[in-house]
Amino acid sequence: MITEEIRRVAELMEPGGAIVVLTGAGISAESGVPTFRGPGGLWRQFRAEDLATPEAFARDPKLVWEWYDWRRGLIAKVEPNPGHRTLARWEARFPEFVLVTQNIDGLHARAGSKRIIELHGNIWKTRCPEEGLVADNAEVPLKAIPPACPSCGAMLRPHIVWFGEPLDPADINQAWAASSRCRLMFIVGTSAVVHPAASLPALAGRAGAQIIEINPEPTPLSPYANFSFRGKAGEILPLLDETLSKISTG
Ligand code: OAD
Figure 1 (tube, rainbow, N blue to C red):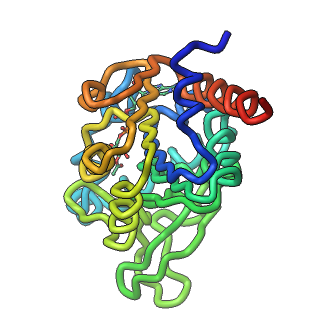
Figure 2: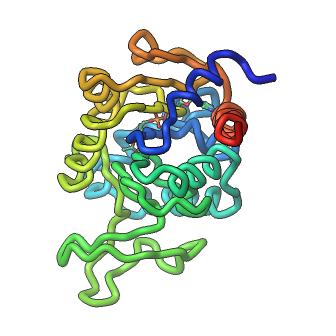
């Protein structure tokens, strides 16, 4: 059954209108990737200070790499879900579509999305702290922990933004620019507590965009959303897509 609210949002998705989608760990939950703060979430089992800060890496790089190697193993076994796939279809459908994700799991790309701003990096990439070289690395499990730079031998680090580190200015600038000129902003599967990602919807809202949240739980951004769908991304996004197709075929 198509709810009235789904239909209203689908009607707002005009072919030429700029759309930004901000995703978080919740969109990958239905694929089987643990979130950070929900039940079974990573930050309920592990201390971020021990594993996801530059200080933790300086103290014990092997421990940090082992944790990322374990997560890579989990992610390698799962598949993108209908939520990821819907967003990949929207990129093809809307010329002005920007996907901004806090996720590092690479599932948006595996679903077919091509233009992705990965604000927090990517678990399938390494970075050489000496030369700054970012490289793809799909080894599961990693052959050597910690891995070494093939060019200079330095110890590689995950290409991930840790707590206390700034985002890549190119990424956040692009995300800011897209958010401040979009007509619609979808906030999907994020607890909206980590900034600057969680500030993007406010920017969009101030510029007059309609804000649509998809999350089974309320978040600090819920009071500012024009539409709140309390459901799973893998169900609501395909439902919106189906409705969109019905509307456009008359
Ligand atoms: P969180 O774990 O904080 O939040 C996940 C959100 O997804 C929660 O609000 C859930 O209610 C929601 N959720 C769960 N299942 C869902 C589903 N099927 N469909 C839609 N929503 C669902 O994850 P993030 O908000 O992504 O940063 O966390 C932000 C950042 O904090 C992460 O990028 C990571 C973490 O520390 C870094 O690693 C730098």
